[in-house]
Image (cartoon, rainbow, N blue to C red; front, side, top):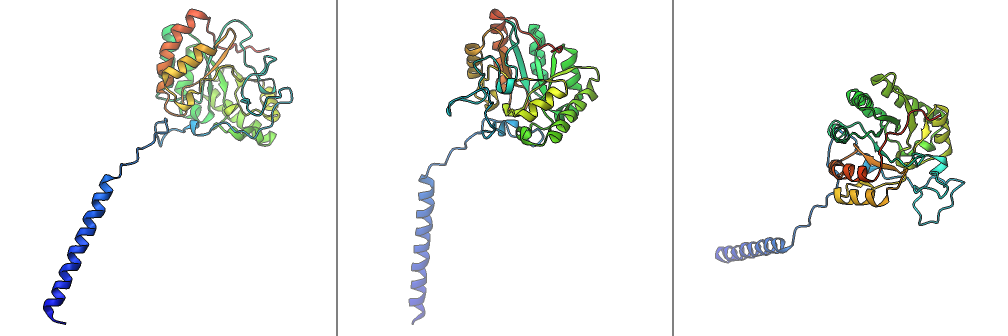
Length: 281
């Protein structure tokens, strides 16, 4: 084969390769980029995100409650009690705001400031690890006259499935971390993460002198649905005696803080707000 023929064939191959590359690039540019889907929770490598642990669904239903398969297990029973006899009412016409998963150095101070501005006392269900890491915030909660509640050591939703000794050790470790910051503060309540109550976890908290604390109103603020939806849910569902569940930690709680700015004056127009009493006897 002559050299000129070889060179000509090589030129044809190069031209074809260039055309194919250009065609591929053009095609890629015409394909729309897939949008990034936000989880609704701000990313962080320093703070735990309990919102990433949805409530378990395989816990047995309370013997006294027979919900339909489509009914949310966490909803109050008709007899005024929550799962396994847990508390869902203040027992009076007053309403109790409760805040779970803290303390958090970013959001707990904002919640405390708003509560102080409106003269409202609330109940804080704190996680043992966070209490250990932020004892100053535990001190601030107590100094402002709020009630403390044990919320397990590390927000273990499966805690109720563990052995009685493991459950008791978890609750004691959490209470010890709280009392390391505020030695004389009473811890009158325990709230099971995810509301995943079982008889062993109820027995353990009661044996340690704590009342199992559930809720009546849940705006699902842990899913970060936005301030408007949180506000609407709380205002539409709250009744005299309601215990309202919200969160001051465990993820992006800016929506909860914004909702609280609207909720406090609106709730005070309709109800008296109180911290749950520490004397539960």
